[in-house]
Image (tube, rainbow, N blue to C red):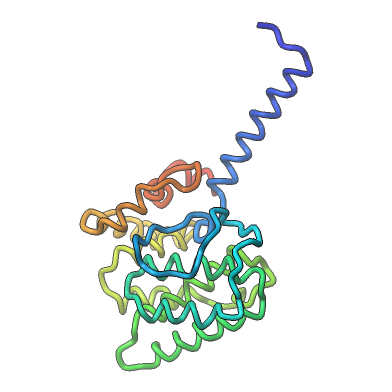
Length: 228
C-alpha cells in the first residue's frame, strides 16, 4: 500500500501523539494522577471521573480543612488517608486560602504529635503526604515548598511500625530518591501486600495507561529508569 506525503505526515503525527500520551500518563505526579482504591471507606466527596477537575464538582472548598480532618481523624487506614489527601490536593488548587488553611492545620497536628511522649504516626504521615502532594500539584507557588516533609515521613514510619500501606506511600514519595530508602519501602510494600488484600488491589491496578503500581515502584524497573 502506497501512502501520500500528506497521509505519511498524518500517521507520523498520530504515532507521536500516542507516544506523548503514554509518556505523560506514566510521568504524571504519582501522588495525584492515580486514584487509590479504598473500598467502601468514606473520603472527600468525588463526583467527577476527571482527575484534573473540570469545575463541575460543586464542592465548597471553604469546608476543605474541616472535612479533611474529620475523615483523617476517623480512620487508621493509611490508604484512606492517601486518597483523602489526594482529593484534598486536587480541590486545593482552585482555592489557595483553603490550601493554606489545611496545610497549617496538618502541620500543627503533626508537631503536636511529635512533641508528645508517644507520637501518633498518622498526623506525622498526613503532614508529610500533603506537603509532598502540594509540591507535585501546586507548583513552585505553594505553601509547602520550603517544608522538609521527609523527616515527618520517617518519624511516622518509625512510630507506625510495620505498615505496608505506609511503605507504599513512602515508595511513591521517594521514586527519585533517596534510592536506598525507596528500595526498602518498595520491598516492604510488595511483601506486605501478600497479607493485605486492599494494598494488593492497589498494587495490581494500572497507573493510568502505563504499568501497574507494583511495577511503578519496583526498584530498578525500566519505567522508573526511563523517568530518570
